[in-house]
Length: 268
Ligand SMILES: C[S@@+](CC[C@H](N)C(=O)[O-])C[C@H]1O[C@@H](n2cnc3c(N)ncnc32)[C@H](O)[C@@H]1O
Image (tube, rainbow, N blue to C red; front, side):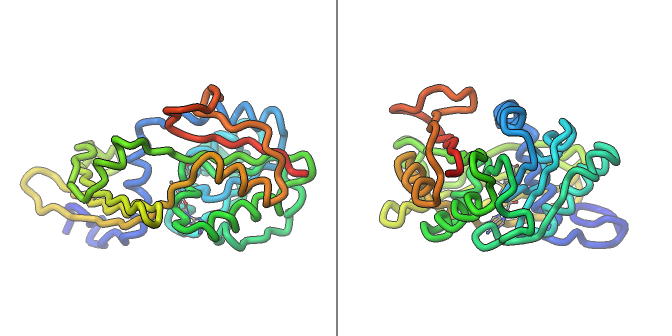
């Protein structure tokens, strides 16, 4: 039987489907690639990406000639990163080292030798609570060589965003997944809890072909909001000297109305 969610009669595991759908979310490029390429050119390697996901950033950095280690807790995401590196060629595959681990606690054999370590695209927020976020900053610091660069990128939702996060359903997109040819409709519902500074994000992906039964995939995330000041304080406490907090990927100055905080810090 073939159809949505099936591949030659085998039902796609949920983790694999969610990793595939993560890449479908990111067919719209967030625009952060040039920043990491420029920072990697400045720092040199080896490079550590914490929460590497499907290798969206790590694979191009390895293709640019850097030794890159990527850590992630999700084996299905890492499997896609492995396939992305393989598709980029043998030399890229050789330069990308993928490790299953928890970025709050992982300590790699190369700790203390990395020239650049980063947590991209809101991944710090996904850790969900303050102590976990501080632990991830400590992991970055523990892996950097003195003088090495740490980079963290978090989203700063504004008052209008937060007001919309009241549980209402919103249509994020209908989009064809180029890998499967199926139509994917993404619907999300977010709830902001001001007391804990968290956003509970429930996402439903419905996919199928016309006339076939649809398959639904569900994911549930908890994001903890982090202010630029808190990020700065957490980095300093971890042993990093803050060089810059920027408001966007072009490193425009941080200020009122900034949609993100991008911290660049140097290991003492
Ligand atoms: C938003 S994705 C970012 C992926 C990639 N950095 C990028 O920019 O495309 C967040 C990633 O964080 C990973 N993650 C969440 N909690 C983690 C943890 N405690 N340890 C390691 N990885 C974690 C998830 O598995 C997921 O791959």
